[in-house]
Image (cartoon, rainbow, N blue to C red):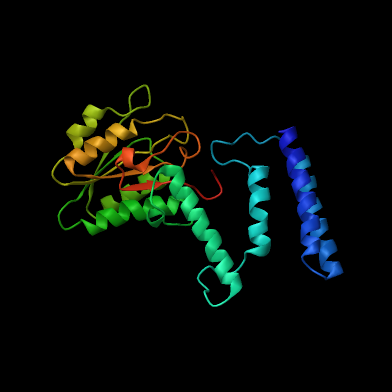
Length: 249
């Protein structure tokens, strides 16, 4: 933690100078430098943070990598009539390609949302609503992230039936129980890749294979998996994979 604070303080100092160089207004420069240095003092004086399972502090290297985008690439990427928009669009599309290569996907398959909470909501409710005239059954687990469980409960209020599979002592679901739970009305199976509280890694490839054989859509919340275990969307057989959560991963 001491090393983290030291590195973060260095970044704040460096970017205070960078901010000063980006404007000719001397008083504004001083205010920005003072604000940056005050942030450094706050970091030093606060107690040790022990709630990392809920959310983590920003890695100093991430902060250093992202500050230039806030300072220089602030144009609207959809404004295609001027240089600022073109630069931002290039940055967004480069990020899209990098994320796609990380998980073995096509860049055209990557959709940006505000975070995994919104993405999980869109995936579950979107698939359910689109198929509601023919199928009305969803399968998930009792240990999913709250945003997934809340989405499923919402669908129950709309008339969908939801099966909440229990987990074994190992934290894993039973593949046999999953197969038995699938019926001709099942539209979607939602099982997270890595649990955000206990760290269990579900047998996602096998779950995806079962869903493909049964012709059922498969969704996985992989927010805790990205960057920690290899992810290949083709092997997972997943229709939707949600990767990042706002302010968390």
